[in-house]
Amino acid sequence: MSATINENYLLLQNSYLFAEIARRVDEFQGENPDKDIIRMGIGDVTKPLSPSVIKAFKDAVDEMADPDKFRGYGPEQGYSFLAEAIIKNDFEPLNISLDIDEVFISDGAKCDTGNIQEIFDLDNIVAVTDPVYPVYVDTNVMAGRTGHALDNGKYDGLVYLPCTEENGFIPSLPETPVDLIYLCFPNNPTGTTLTTSQLAEFVKYAKENHSIILFDAAYEKFITEDDVPHSIYEIEGAKEVAIEFRSFSKTAGFTGTRCAYTIVPKELKVHDSEGKLQSLNNLWNRRQTTKFNGVSYPIQKAAEATYSSSGKAEINENIEYYLENAKAIRDSLVKIGLNVYGGINSPYIWIKTPNDMKSWDFFDLLLNKANIVGTPGAGFGPSGEGYLRLTAFNTLENTKEAMDRISKLSF
Ligand code: PLP
Image (cartoon, rainbow, N blue to C red):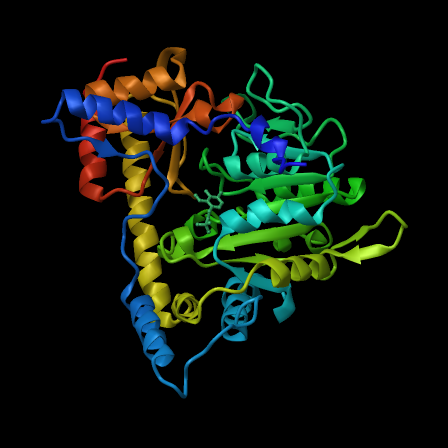
């Protein structure tokens, strides 16, 4: 006997995207040490935690030093003070009522969107939009829900819903039956959104086909337009078919601090093999209480502070700053005749490459001629070929400088 591995891991395609970007940037910088490179590739925030958040964070750390206030293990699902603040601020204004035990606080939407597939059988057919946040795909590959990667970059057994210029980045409903559908709106990487009625089509599909929607709303706070749903539960009946993921990462600069939450409504029920209805809320609760020991108290206090009146104002100011960068990017690129998408309800701007260039060729051109780093769209899936993503998470000065440089290029 000897140990064996989970061979599904061997099916994973090399995640070379950010490594390859770093390699090309390092090589360029090595050959051109005097060039000032502006990085607009990685989707990480740059603004620090806001003063109200920091104060709550520090106060909570002080409590941990006080024998009368110290806290050990907290509830795996999160403290009720934060779950209550979430319901009151993120859902009640949308007329969505939730019970406290439908909110599961965690250390990231990456973990939650990656782990959620564990509560579903391996036989479920999974649909993802293409291009896509890679976590949804890779975690299903690891679990064994797919076959091999094909030459076209898709995994055998996964259903891809292309989002391209041709369909206005609105995925069609699956043509063959699927059980789980990952949707992310506002979208990473395209920065585009669905209207309420477009999202309602997916809810209707899920009801009719007994499928479950895994709705990632990590960029919800960037929504500026009216007809864009902030939560999938704004759609009638969605509580029976959808799990929603949210995060403080992009909302409040928690990428390095780690706090997020997932809503699993009690209405969500799926038949087991004996035909009995099983609650997904119970299964996720069981999963979390077994494998997760909660987010630290100071971090949950810091997250709670994002809902104070000063916290809200500070966070809005940061989001507005990023959105102003996004607007500067959009306006400059439109002016030079490029087709650009996103950046209105999102920190991401999705550029159609000029003259049908390949994503990596456009990446090289921007790096070599303008010293700007973007992310080649092909790295997010086959339908991302021919696109490049820029992010609005830089300073306004750098963003403007980058746009000046691009405007001087001729394509
Ligand atoms: N979901 C999407 C669509 C993302 O783009 C990201 C981060 O880039 C995450 C989730 C990860 O969020 P978190 O920092 O909460 O793990």
